[in-house]
Image 1 (cartoon, rainbow, N blue to C red):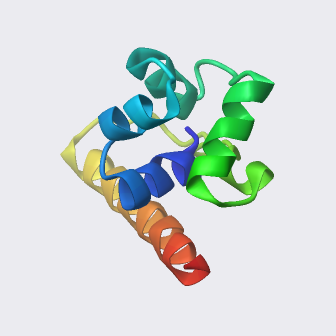
Image 2: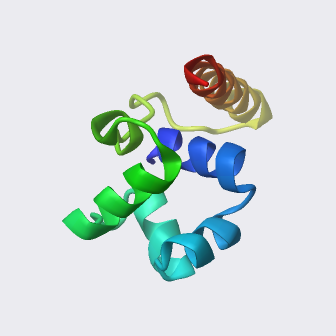
Length: 99
């Protein structure tokens, strides 16, 4: 997932839909780029960087969750959800500190 891209879009554009309209990138394609399922074209990278006003490499960095034991119960799921929430909070604080 490109968490920096997702968080920056949410902070600066309000939603993926609003940013897709503003950038001219089709919404489903933008969503797949954010999820890391598609690579953006050089033109899309430049357009996003220009509109969002942040470093390209930072914006398009892909974050992965390290392999862990399979989630088998509610406790493991809750722990994983807390870890993800902490990481997203850290990313949001990093974005806020740049502005």
